[in-house]
Amino acid sequence: MKKIAIFSSLFIGALAFAQGIKFEDSNFATILAKAKKENKLVFVDAYASWCGPCKLMVKNIFPLQSVGDYYNSHFINAKIDMEKGEGIGLAKKYNVKAFPTYLFINGDGEEVHRTLGYVEENDFIQFAKDAGDPSKRLTALKQKFENGEKDPEFLKNLAGLTMYNDAAFASRVMERYFAAKTEYDQDDIQMLLMGAQNMDGPLYKIFQTKKAEISKVITPERYADLDKNIKISNIFKKSYNAEAKTWNDDYFLTEAQKFLSKPEAETILKKARANRALRAKDIPTYEKLTLELYKDTTANSSEELNSLAWNFFENVNTKSSLEKAVAWAQESVKKNENYANTDTLANLYNKVGDKKNAKLWAEKSIALAKSTGQDSADTEKLLQSL
Image (cartoon, rainbow, N blue to C red):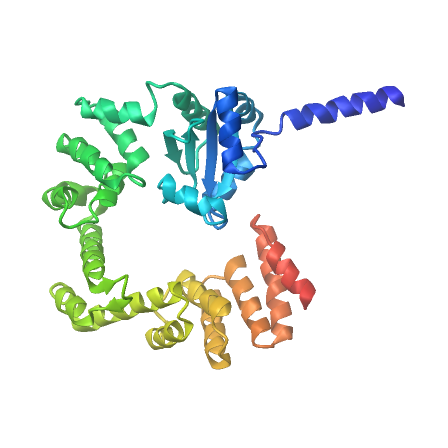
């Protein structure tokens, strides 16, 4: 029995050793001090609690032995929510605007490298190796660009690394990249669109002059839709005063009607006002505008209706409005029944006091979730409460 116990403890210890990245449980100043003392870089997983790719990294990549072996031996690792506590200040300091962002920082608190997004095992380890090599760090890559590098793959990679935290620099990189392009693929167009959102910038001019080439890849109709969305976005930026939180309706409608019908322009403006009100937690305004916008939902998709219904569940308390949300959720289910909209319907029925239907739809949602491999924990909690 003693031998078995010893073997078991060794086996458990081996498993613990192979559990992936070990993250420090202390404040950032202490982490920096430890990195400086051990002459290592700090690796920061800069995440947000709502971020799907962040959760997938935690589930699929961080626990891997190969990843843990490399990161634990070369870095002091930190996992920080950028929307809570000291993470708020760190997000501002290191200009974190997309999640997940991975920062590599020296003991003096200076950023030396970064990347972002969901990354597979081998690439994630390679990013770490690049961070440890001064010739491959972001600062070195930027200098290589300034020295005139024109290799397309280099430029494409550099644009991807910088577009979320240094838009002006990324724009210059993309200008050089697209200046030499004669044919486009889907990745090229996606990248161009990221930089073409400012109609006054050079990348929008490229988007216009390369209309024929781009339309071959995405169809002329899709090109027209994208161009329209860019124009609308630019008009909105000039129509809304963020400091005063006021709209210039006349300006928006005048400019928008240069390429939209009056009813379409008015609807788009009302949707923008509703979305802004929801973000500002001005629920009465959001509720009023949304009810006006969605009197007829026959043309809306199942996903749109489910999103509307869920927003009302989370934010609205007026019973008549919640009953309207129930109708939206019912229509969403009719168009495409799935675990998400059946869960929405169950929660709405519960909120309006219809426990019988809440129980019925919660059970359906759980069954659908299990049949498709989705997480049903929250719905199961709702069912237990019923």
